[in-house]
Amino acid sequence: MARASQPRSDEVTLEVVELIGSVVARYHEEYEEAAAEHALTGAQAGVLNLLARHPLPMRKLAEKLKCEPSNVTGIVDRLESRGLVERRPDPNDRRVKLAAATDEGRRVASGLRDALRFAREPLAGLSDEERRTLRDLLRRMLDDTGDGHAAAG
Image 1: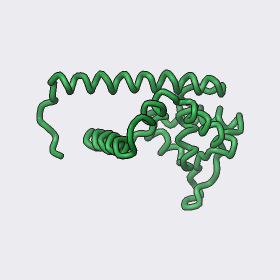
Image 2 (image 1 turned 60 degrees about the horizontal axis):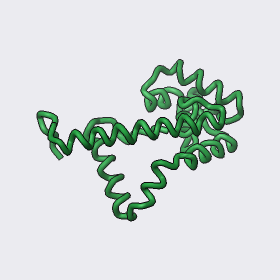
Image 3 (image 1 turned 135 degrees about the vertical axis):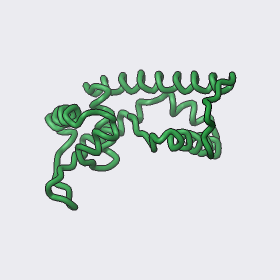
Image 4 (image 1 turned 180 degrees about the vertical axis):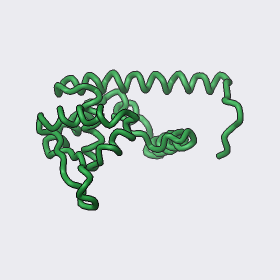
């Protein structure tokens, strides 16, 4: 879909923007609470959630989080000291270190995802088709802005 040259500012667009903002705020609030229950910061929980999906090189992790690699190193260090993350050589390039969730890290990440009730409960009220439509629309919004499929927590 071609992008309009001027952003739309009709009432529906403004309401959608406000609703997205409210969803994001509630997501972050619950994510911070869930992280605190595991004695993690929101940033640590976000990194753990990404690494529970698949191991990533530190540089790629920093790109996904849109932060400096030195910040990611500190977060991974703290997670590693708790046994939630480990560093291992990349099988495709032994010069590169991958950060990966341990079994315990994947268990904690699963608990974090399970704690996010606000999104899961309302989404359960939507049909499978409605959830797929919502997912596809959100993906399209992200693709149109060049953000790709952002991972957040």
